[in-house]
Image (cartoon, rainbow, N blue to C red; front, side, top):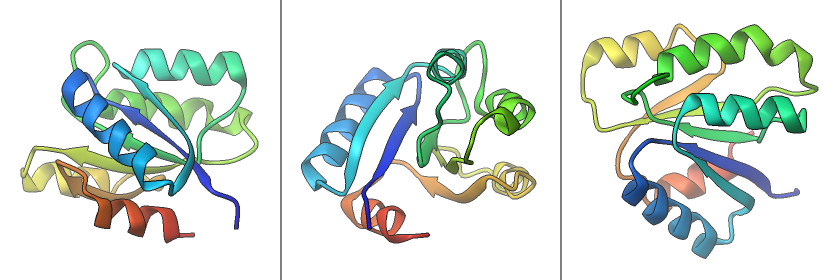
Amino acid sequence: MPQKRIYIIDDDPIYQLVTKKLIEKSNLFSETKAFGNGNEALHYFEITGDLPDVILLDIEMPGMDGWDFLDELLRIERSFHKEATIYVASSSIATEDKIKAKNYHCVKDFLSKPINLEKLKVIASEE
């Protein structure tokens, strides 16, 4: 089975760096990219005409937060040839965030930060 591409959308540069290094070191994914906010990621998707297989999405970001990103992605995703599987990766433990995430068909799971190797292995192996 070919390896998946995984993108991180998170405004915390340290979290981005640590998570990206962990992903690259794991050799579980073929490509990793990181974006500081949803606008950057959407712009990249529109330019390349392509979505990754997996997105690790932060909820609380300035400008366009994770919920706004999900709404916008749902609006444009029909123009792409596939859907991305999204994991909300948040330090929030708010029950309402977990419930809200379930309202999006593209959100596979709600993960607590930080992401560890075990969580990455599960993500890489899921269909």
